[in-house]
Length: 143
Image 1: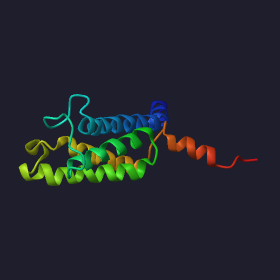
Image 2 (image 1 turned 120 degrees about the vertical axis):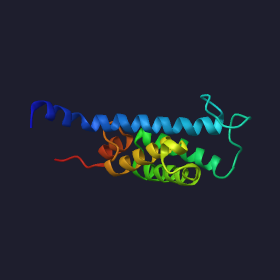
Image 3 (image 1 turned 90 degrees about the horizontal axis):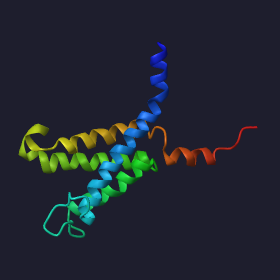
Image 4 (image 1 turned 120 degrees about the horizontal axis):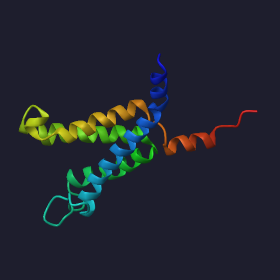
């Protein structure tokens, strides 16, 4: 293993942490746009999804809550599994009927989010996660 490989490997947890933060923040911004009509991405004439509307409002709640949990690295694995599942549902129920491939059915975002969150569920939060600081505080100090 070269010196460069060793340096890159030592930075892998930070790259994973940065990936988690960016993906979670992007996902949360979709939820905030749909729920509160912010960021210019809200659907509908009123600027926000009507309260309790199935499945749009519930999807937006999942996006906001799970996106924030993943971004901060708190309960990241279960939040990532829920987020991945919601995007898989969106892909197969909303996009798939319009065409087989993501480029045909405009499902690229749903597919990328689904696979990104599945990856994060298996790899863990990486560096810079709240769960890591919580774990450090609860572990007994070695004598």
